[in-house]
Length: 313
Ligand SMILES: [Zn+2]
Image (cartoon, rainbow, N blue to C red; front, side, top):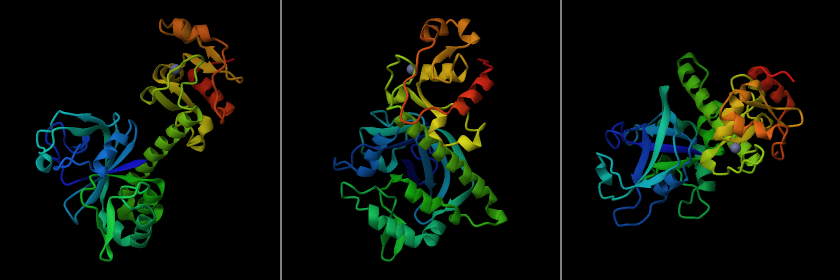
């Protein structure tokens, strides 16, 4: 899931809580009730991509995207400038990192104009915010035109809605749009990497695949590439180029403390024999089989990993 933040200005919550550093909202409305668009904050997970829409009514632009630095949580710490949300005693907060601005902000009005029909149909199929199946959408068709949903601070963009908004058709092929295009390409890469990582973890049933490792907590798991994203364009997004490791085993594989042979057994490298960490943590598992999922790792990718870490069988 991709998330969309709608923020009025860059100040947002004041120092430490500014736009681009975190998402935040109250946990309750003034009268004490819950608000679905705020409760979404608890569903944001570390690594999720967040898209940012900023500006006052009718002047909003998509200005950039970032990555959630941690799962969403509840806190009694207060932003220095809670503004309209001053009533709250507890807040949701999601720290953000790696904010990447679009060189050329994309006006929301243009998207509403260019994709009115598709957006209206999508809303009709997915919206009813009151229903249990509906999505919390950032816009609503009203009196024959599209406008932002009031109070939709955080909302959901699934693959279908993202494609309507940022599908290639939305970017005209002319020179002035090159900056927008490259910004969107970077966003698409982020979305693709996130989808890959999710699919790899799913393939390994959300457990580290290293022999006898029992780590299954999602905050400690990585859906990692065997061959790096930048090194193998043709294997991008292919689950056979992925392994699900805990943080420690991911680091050990990435730095070449061990490789996997053709039969998917752990083979410690020369590096492991001189590493104080690897001696008790990798060497005892020599020749043991990793746990596999429905999609097995690609041998071509494993060979490329051997090459990268300098291993010769
Ligand atoms: Zn592990």
